Length: 103
Image 1 (cartoon, one colour):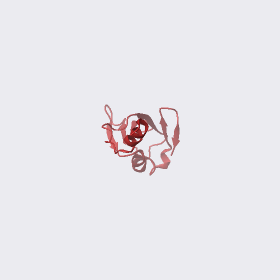
Image 2 (image 1 turned 30 degrees about the horizontal axis):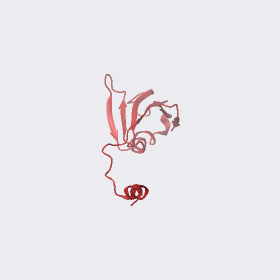
Image 3 (image 1 turned 90 degrees about the horizontal axis):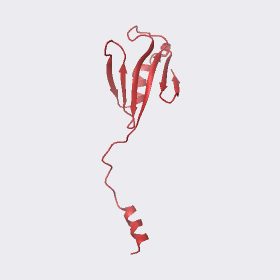
Image 4 (image 1 turned 90 degrees about the vertical axis):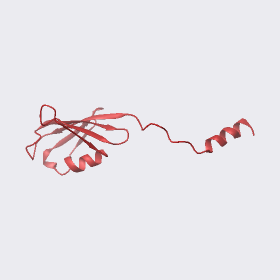
């Protein structure tokens, strides 16, 4: 067997999965122009991170002094529960790279 065919054979062999989860995060803030429920207020009400796995961690900035933390399986799940049902809040999600999504 030549070195080239051995390398090709090695490429075809099943490999063990990597031991680590994907790495990397994106940070974001949530701004509300209006608060329909009167609970969390207006302005920047959430800071959060989206992990490379898609999981999303949000830190509600209310109630003071610590707020609260919630973990979602995905950004879509968070948006479905807390943002999309309230279009009158004029919510703006701003990513760390400046990208904005308005709801």
